[in-house]
Length: 160
Image 1 (spheres, rainbow, N blue to C red):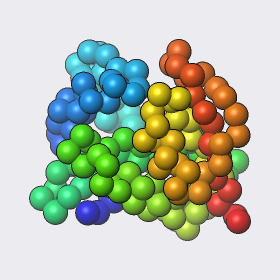
Image 2 (image 1 turned 90 degrees about the vertical axis):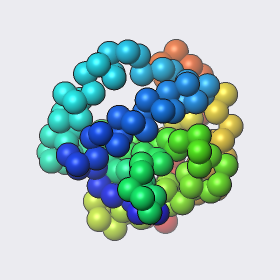
Image 3 (image 1 turned 45 degrees about the horizontal axis):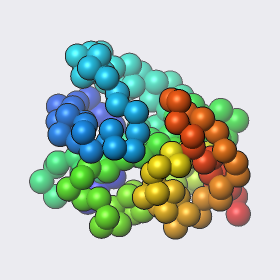
């Protein structure tokens, strides 16, 4: 599997990934809503613009057939820090794909993007994401609320 920087060519495959896994993702995260899918093309263009501006770094994990199996994003880059968000599809869940993707994007954050700290919030009800964060060196630092859900904030110091 390859971790690729999000590009225009990924649009159709990312949309397929999100549609195919919508119900699965909704088990542990707020649903993106119908508008997300209806306006996907506009949103994809906007994400690429944010990436060009250095505000965010978006990535897709693709298998040997070019199928997107996960997304690993660094958003809101400010003063050497960014927020990590990630999701993997139901077909690869529980196989170490999320851990591998988080490790890869963490290395990029440090080595390519010059970041020194990552922040990740995982829903209390999302034990799998919390386990991935723990396994990849993130440390829980407190409780927060995101999208109306109780979450645990995690931090990873990339200078250590």
